[in-house]
Length: 176
Figure: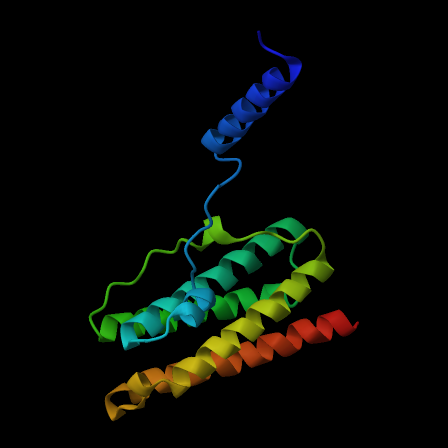
C-alpha cells in the first residue's frame, strides 16, 4: 500500500527528473573555460594559451554585450565591449599566423547576467582580475620565452595592459 510519504518521494523524484530533462538545471558543471581553464592547466602550451585567451575574451565580450542588452548603453561596458571585439580579432590573427584552428565562441551559454549595474561592475572587476592573472601566468610560462614567440608575448602583454585599464574603469564606476 502506497503511503503519503512514498507518494511524495515519487513526486519529488519525478519533478527532479523533469527539471533535469528539460535543461532547466544541469546536474553537471561545465568544463572550465577561459581563465578558469588556464588556471587549472599545469603544463601550458602555446596553443593552449591562445585557446584560453580567446575563450576569456569571448566570455568578456558575451557578458558585456548581455549587460548592455539588459541595462542599455551604459559605461564602462559600452566602451569596453568594443575593446573585447578588438582583442578577439588580435587573437584570431595569431591563430591564423600559427596555422591553428580558431575555437568556436561558446561563451554565450556560460554567462550569467547580473541583476544590477553594481553587481555587473563587481563582476567586471572580478573578470578583469582573473584575466590579468591569466596573462601574467602566460607571460611567465617557459614555453613563451622562446624568441620565436616574441609576437605572442607582445600580444599577451597588450591584452593584459588593456585588462588593467578595464579593471580601473570598473573600479572607478564602483567608487561613484
